[in-house]
Length: 77
Image (tube, rainbow, N blue to C red):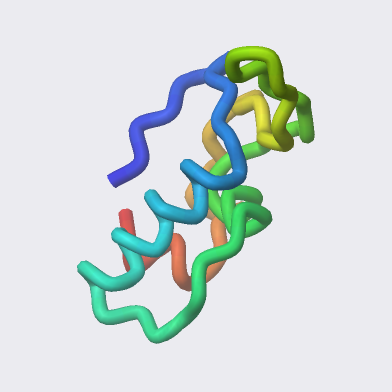
């Protein structure tokens, strides 16, 4: 389960790993992409500083309401 809160900033790499783990756990035959976070959360793209580098990621704005979520999200809820 993803427990991101409003204001959390998550790298694309972390999102893909988290989502793929959830997909595998629930038998979803799909390759996770960072953009899939938009199925579950309202987000905006951002840059995240890690050491001296800036990497792509997303900032969590809010959790999507049940009616706004995709079918895959319904399975994971």
